[in-house]
Amino acid sequence: MATDLHSSAKLRPESDNAPAWQDTALLVKDCIVGNRNAQKYLYNQYAPKAYAIIRRYTRQNEIADEILNDAFYKVFTKISSYSGTGSFEGWIRRVVINTVTDHMRKYIRDQQIYHATEMPEDVYMNDDAAGKMAYKELLAIVHELPDTQRMVFNLYVFEELKHKEIAEALGITEVNSRWHLNDARRRLKEKINSIMKR
Image 1 (cartoon, helix red, strand yellow):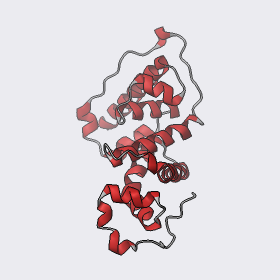
Image 2: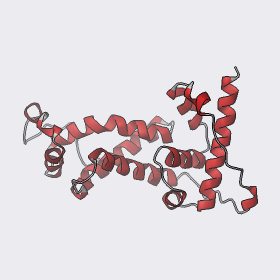
Image 3: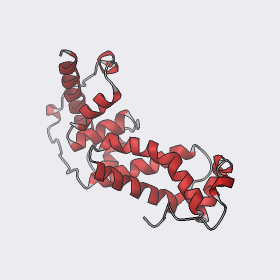
Image 4: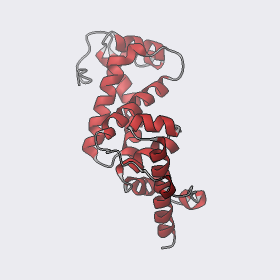
């Protein structure tokens, strides 16, 4: 990463300015001019949430760490593009999601579904059953999904993207996106029901 988050700052000392950096505008401004302590403060504030998002998409620590590093490299090199309107955390989240899709696209091969008649019917999950499970248990089940299904499911459910947006992000068709979402729901429903019957 071009930005060394652990370097000693030559500008404002962190101890004097950490409270001031609660002002997003000042934090962004200081990061733009290369204040290492401001960058470290930003990283410490937002990296844990970013990492939690990334871990929904991959169970491999090495890949998650790589994506996190790349995401914050983009945050620091593109931070001047943040307009100041809207949530800064939301802007970072979008950078993280874009980085995740860029990385995962390398591992996802276009598993096109050419016969629409083979599409599974819409599958709905029992929210009550899922609600009785711990988050870690649900995450572990989601991690068992094939790569493409896991990506589509997460982007649709957690990021609330439309199938058109998912298709563009992953380089698949909208029909494919719908197929993967329904098959992911079917797999999850079967797994959850199996666990709840134990």
